[in-house]
Image 1: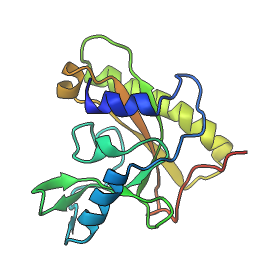
Image 2: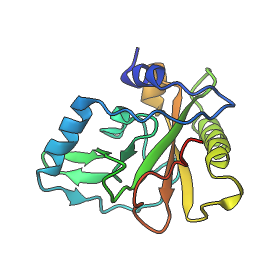
Image 3: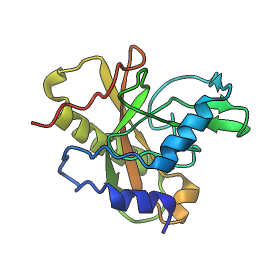
Length: 178
């Protein structure tokens, strides 16, 4: 079972239904995030277009993020020698992104275009569930998709992420449970 599949099992979302995500943060993830924040990191200098190409399942750090949790935009982390994302407590702004759900793609051969269409469509359904009728017009969403390599390893999970188009969010974007 892949790391992504293990994480998916712990925070399953039923396809077609969008329950309130749980907000749990593993102590290890918090410790990693704290240690990363104590060192100098360089902001990612690439284009910040947030669509199905913004992040993938192979972006270091993304597999540690669970439903309801927040994380940074990708940035160059000299100590790791690569571009990474890190867990960011949603109640400690600024917040760049927040996961609002996971959906499982249908099994079959790897097809990047079909997967992107599936991820865009299913994440749009979840987005409409949480933020109906443009209640937050500043918010948008994007899917984090498996790659050809993670697909070959059995990864079928699409992560759905919300962000604010105007800049970092002041905290969790998820509506409060009623």
